[in-house]
Length: 145
Image (cartoon, rainbow, N blue to C red):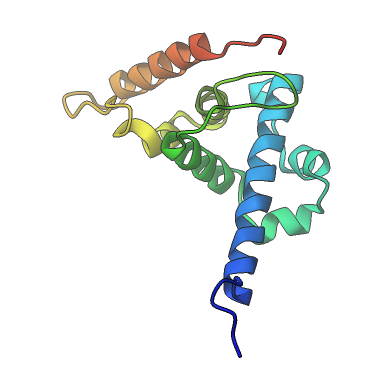
């Protein structure tokens, strides 16, 4: 007989995937804060998360896929951010990682932050995206807890 209060195998697997993705996102933030926003690599993220690079690639085929998922996750998240005893704005860190990789990745969160302007194109849109990254950099507050 199936216990209705007990999670199914699919629910348990989905929870494990969610937890691993959050661990990868936390690892990416840690790497960015330790090494710099332009120095985030899949190898460093995997090492910090304690998984193989192949395990990371199973969930995210490219670094851009990982960054897009981070931006979406942190833009949707409503919880207070904490990382290894230091409070940070994880969306701001993710946006700065995106800006260091490719400013077009910021389009992932542009509608959430109301920064997409249809009257801008090309270099003007890039300038707006860099202004967003600069504004988000100001949101990063590092303080001891």
